Length: 114
Ligand code: 5GP
Image (cartoon, rainbow, N blue to C red; front, side, top):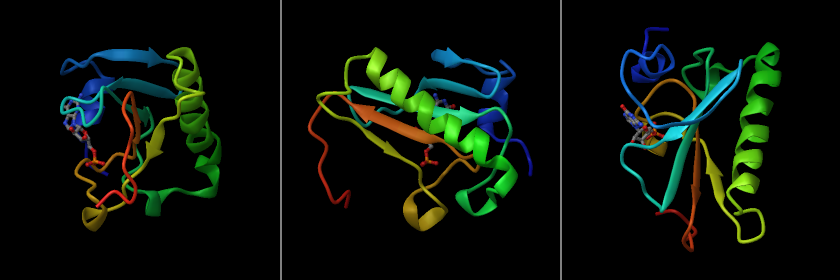
């Protein structure tokens, strides 16, 4: 797949407000936040969409959720609640084709999201 803006963030070619990093993933603030807390958690390995996840990616994809859970706990949102969502393709609102979890918190979040 071709590089997206998220590869540039991983490679520090463009700036981002990074809140967590390890060997498999990066978490940073969304540039256009939809909640008081809106983070994006991305694998360092580029995968375009959920459709492109392979069985061999299960560790890294699981790691994204574990990282979201750890960040939410560290920020104190585990009791109050938060939302983790991943959009797949245009109809769901995906605009950057490098999979990412949105972690949203800090206000009551409506459901359904439309
Ligand atoms: P999607 O719509 O693909 O699910 O989410 C992409 C998200 O990436 C959007 O919420 C958008 O605001 C965010 N985003 C797009 N470009 C940048 C950027 O250059 N920096 C940061 N921090 N977030 C970005």
